[in-house]
Length: 112
Length: 114
Image (cartoon, rainbow over all chains, first blue to last red; front, side, top):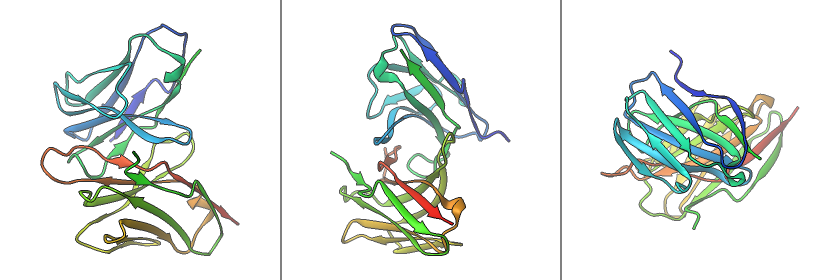
């Protein structure tokens, strides 16, 4: 039982490049989330999904898009990366929305 | 506007003593509260939670206290151990229909000194 996994673990992008972060969970959870963590800012919600094919914006959605074609996978896309998107990105999932969420190990992204 | 506030960015405690981490919230709709622990280079892990129908919840060395009138909760760790050194996040949610999110504080870095 792997829980929540994230790919890749590290990535360096140049400004303007695009990339997709992949999150996968094997707990059959309905809800999935993407957060970013910046120094002194805590965890801020980017986008979330309440089921396959259903997504919504969180607190800081600008510059990101998401896709959830299958229940177990949640993708976060950066179409044109900016230095302000340098951060650590965490994916999480939960069985019931506003309760315990289980986090992946994170992806450290640097945009130069 | 920050709805969940952890006003102490850091806290140092001697091993064996009590660690008390504090959290305040402003949204009176919040009725479920959680604490997460995060080590460097790892994802946050769930530690303990409390519903607003209770004022205390214990799990081993960890106890969370909720004061609804003050909109304040605290996490007590007794006794503190060096392995407890981590960043602790407080989170809150509203459990009503249409609610899917947790709102996190900015975290408190706990250092337990051997």
